[in-house]
Amino acid sequence: MLKRGPKSSAELATIGPAGIVTMRRPEPTPDMTQEQGEVWQSVVNRLPAEWFPAETLPMLAQYCRHVVSSRHVAQLIERAMADGEFDLDEYNRLLIMQEREGRAMSSLASRMRLTQQSSYDEKKAHRGKRVISEAAKLWEG
Image (cartoon, rainbow, N blue to C red):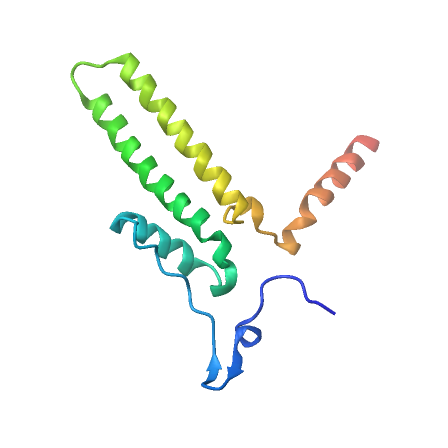
């Protein structure tokens, strides 16, 4: 019977002609900047080695690009706010750019199961049910 969830390191290790072989974490793509590569490493090192199969690596690269772009837009917004001559149209344009980057990051993070919403804790899963049932009892009495 198949087991659900990520595989353990023992399951990922295979014995071949060279001995035990384990999965390696993916490296940043060569076309990424150093800043994008740092985002890549922080994401990849936070999760199990098998989390990113080869077919998701382009999506992870794009996620890293959006994170860095979002930071740059945030810096532009800070500069625009500190500038003596505040241009409302420019500020609005930057906020639209920031929202677009945020949506792209959110979408990619959800698809790769990087968000808190994607994580599941069985202990916390039943909390909402208890609160509802206790609230119902308060109204009954």
